[in-house]
Length: 398
View 1 (cartoon, rainbow, N blue to C red):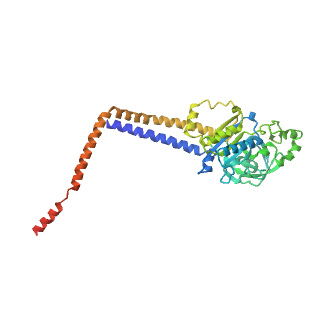
View 2: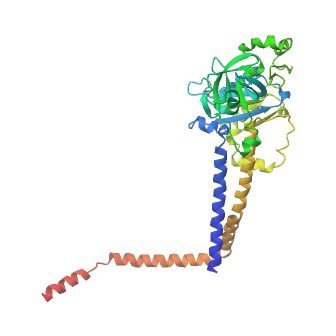
């Protein structure tokens, strides 16, 4: 009987340890995604929310529309009695990006690579590991430079240490501002994160940079169409430049003060003013929380269906893969907790069933305890003359 009881206790301990282990693995997994931890790393004193929004091409979001969104968000912060002067720290940080392709030339080679046209504080949200050089920030006066990954660097120059060297895009020379490391691994490969990638300002990718004037002579009559309204989808393919998919933004990312739960998420939804079928919004700062994992589990299978004509960038695809793994770990945690819950429920039922007997034993035990306590107190109060008797006896013998 005792052996059987010991086995039950051992199984209980093992199940609890396994549940704790799966929980630790989930937290370690989510912490690997630096793009999802910006809110927690930004400020330890203030509460911030990190929110990402991914647009379909039908949304036709441009840089001008981002300015409107920023103004609406500042108004929402002011209405929530939040200081928007940034004197005590920035209340809001944002960035935007879109994806296309560029053909890049160096003195020795050329490569057609995936290109992200970025604006705002993109590299605050995406702290890629620098192998050489520096990022360019949203407040830089001169963003006419490129940041390339190590795949592009090796193809063009045969080295990673190429910061300060020049590449040519559409007949215009641009300095290499930095070289970043390409992440490798199972999920990175599946998300196409290892593809040759270059990061340029949104103006360069969209053909509106001040240094793109030379493109007019290359593009000919198509240049006049390229300088039309921001929402135009006119295609200009010249010297490796494809404007078909770069006239509108794909992604908007926001870090905002979060005085109450879901404030940042709801404020951005209201500021967007778009049809909900034209965008997908994610609160990155809570996506690996227990509530969100249960939500994904509840919609398991359905959420994989994409009916909004939205192409997620590689970092979001990787985060979604990690979410799926986190949900699987949650299921394993719950399975491991089934036996402990049954064990505890069984103990509670046994105690309730034998409550009268247990009450009697407890009463009897307390009665014996107090009886022994009274005897001990009486003995403590009674003077001890044994030492004096021994002393007098020795004196008489002498």
